[in-house]
Length: 393
Image 1 (spheres, helix red, strand yellow):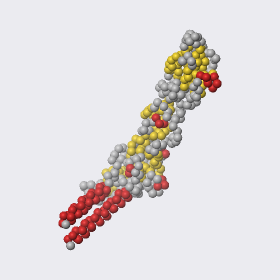
Image 2: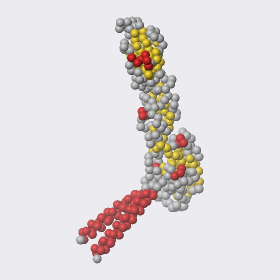
Image 3: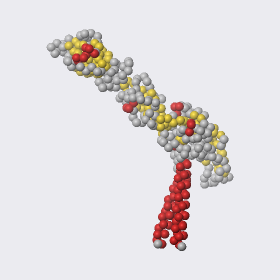
């Protein structure tokens, strides 16, 4: 008889444990229904451009030209700098003739020509059959070759060559002109991992005089503001900035998610407050605070909280005669934040560039903690009961 009662008791405890576990899992699952789980960042918008570097068109000595003739490439491969293949950018070659030399012949050639025997058929002869003018300069477009053929007297004399080569790189700067980064070329893959391109598509090279935007994350967006709400933005994730306002999310070319402040704020009357903050539910609806119980040990709302029926302000709630009452300490919800300060700080009522670092309100789920403790406690209790039952056998 005792054994049957023990078995029945153990069965009851196991059933209770299962109910609590299922309820706990259900609770935890429901708490995450509106929250967007991926990492999203508050961006800083930057301007990037392919620009001349400090060594652009610096005069370099290429030394003596091979007496059999020599090719020189106007390409990134054939120069010390990065050469954009665009109109208006050229390589400049300067010929220096010694007294004993009879002169030279110069050609502008396609990049595919690499044999002297093909020069006369495929290249364009530059001015003069035999030029003997010292310091003569020749320009060649990017992506082509310069060929120079010295004419010497019984091998005597020499021709030296100098060159002015293009040298370009990417420059990334902030809106106020602060340069954050430079590179030795204008290829997008040269960007460091902290910078992310926007809508670049299949573009791999950047040409001069064609600025483009990049972003870099200033801070991780608060998860309590990243939500999916019924009826807002076609039920797609948004970033709530303050009551009634939100930003869309966007994806950089490499999949990096950010708050698209450059697209401007959107409005929705369905957003009454910021989820999981005091006085706000998970679905961004106001939770009544007035007349809730409080005492000298706690319960007053010292931070700015939403006001029922008024989305234009947030207020502090005082504890008066054991109940919460709305105080006169309030801040106005700004109707429009400027582009250079797109975020609203609920602590000060000011528009800011980046939200101030703080521990997210509601990020520690007390009820979840209680559920976990109960599950652990009941598990230990059941194991003890089983151990006692086995000891009686």
